Amino acid sequence: MFRALLAIAALLAVVCTRPLAAQGPDTYVSVVDEYRTGDPDTAIRRLARWPERSVEDSIRQWAKRLRPGQVVAAVMLHTELGAAILGSLPSRTSLQFGHARTLLDALAERRDERADAVRLRWFRFVISLYTADGRLVDAEIYARDALGRFPRDPILIFQKGAILETARSSNSPAAALALLRGRAPASATRQEQTLEAAAAEFRRALAIDPHMAIARLHLGWVYVQLQDDRAREDLTAALADARNDRERYLAHLFLGGLAERQSRFDEAAQEYERARQLCPACQTPYIASSRIEMARGRSEQARELAHQFAALERVEDDPWWTYRFGTPDDEALTWLRAEAHRP
Image (cartoon, rainbow, N blue to C red; front, side):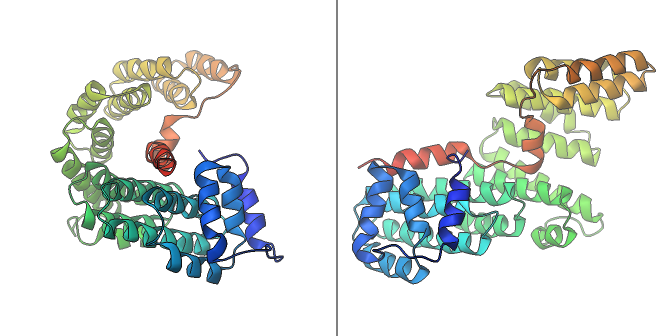
């Protein structure tokens, strides 16, 4: 997703103790313009070496004076720097995202028609980034703030549910409980509570956009885990509304998982095979199909599937893993980068 070696370059720049020759309000605009019309990587690395005080002084002076296109570029300059160092310097990431929000507020004060569109996609990206990095409490804080501004955006509502679903499978029960905020029956187990809360958010998103396949997929899989009879209906609807092979792959995988849990092994095998046809180099359908063959007492066929997978020349990124752990919203990031280059 991010430009090659950007995280390493940014980290080295941040910890470097030798200051640049010029840092501060007089040169801030040149760094912003370098991001917009020159080399974005160079601009990000330059900003990474600035002392925090110089960054604050620059934003204080320029936030309301930059042209709208420059403001969006400045937002993305700070956002991309923060994203690049999230894994190594999360506290500095928070500072960079704070600077981006200050600039977004300045853009909104002008009542520029781009402000809401930029802010909405910025929130979507930041929430997805924190979720994918396992920083679920941070993700939930941003989701709550975003929904306060855009309460009927189905993607934000879906992201809120995805945070909860991810929390259910995380290693931090305390974080999961912190995210619940009383949205599930107290009588349920902790994991059931988290899944029920996630399902409620997915249903809210689908009430606004009934054909949002990814939300329907998540809802159907949550229902599978809750042993809810609505699972099959939602997964079938997700397959019908799927926009791409990734969504179709997951729909077949989850329909197979549902059939397997109900000991309908022939049907499960068919669904896993359909998933494998959509992603022949993905690991999960081979493992699932092999498991089905073992359950049917066909150990030789199970071993053959294992050999087929081992013989693959390369292995694709499996959508199951990005589903389970989340992935940054590339669509929002691409849109924001393009917007930063507009006048």
